[in-house]
Image (cartoon, rainbow, N blue to C red; front, side):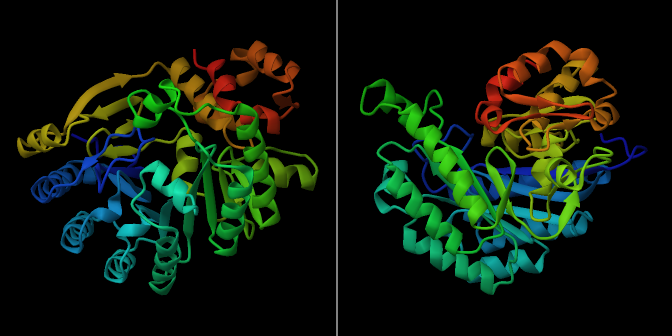
Length: 405
């Protein structure tokens, strides 16, 4: 049971595992929806929420998937009323991932009425052939209609999620998508290169020689993304995430000290519309993870729920959380993970801030690794902070490996 004597956890992730159909690139745990199992999942989730509620005071909530917007009005109302009963509403940022094909005016109103104030819409592409190639169930026209529905419902913080380096995607198609996405005037943009995960249809197509990967084109597309987003008024604050420039807010804590004003803007603040939930991940914050396959990290212990919806429901019906595994991370291992994740952000790590969060000093524990990245041109190091360069951000996963002790 949660330890209510300690400070409550302020971040909550909920995994909704259902999709209308599985996309060819997706390696997340998800399955085709069936009415009875979805209802059973909703009941199980309510039980899991009740178990952890005493230890939660959410500042950020994120419903991801899968396709959370696939849940019908009755199912959403059941979840939201349970959250209301358990005093889990009122988060500063409450995000729900949505597929354009499953957005409706009634659903948008219900979510907004219960305090959902951010929607992340999985657009992926605005080219009809590429949408079909990816196995998406929506059309480009649906994207624009759903965006308008969300605006009319009062959503003033919408993220558009795009993909690049899709097989057969040309630079011209990518530029057209970026231009159209920018014209929609969303508050946030996230964009990811296609990853060929084992056991996905797209991976098997690659293995079968149905197409080849053009790494140079992928790099050019990433550079085009940064250029277009910047010109459209977005600020990059993480490898794949861009938020509208408006009011600037300090990064999660006391950041770097006496440097020039321009340097402080670049290194120590993030845009107001940045995803607060994701920033909590990247800055090593605790969070509860609920739902099938969800991982959480609470007070030094990482948990992972069963990646099986039926088993998840069975465990909760017996009155216990559906945790498949838990691991208590050693302080050095956790510090290395936090270092690696934090470097995904443009701001990198101010040394004082890293020490405050982890009680470890980057300069003592990872001095040679930081020097190695700096010598390679992938990182910049000063007296006060360490961050990846634009080139280093492009290869952040390889850079992160050095910190994972």
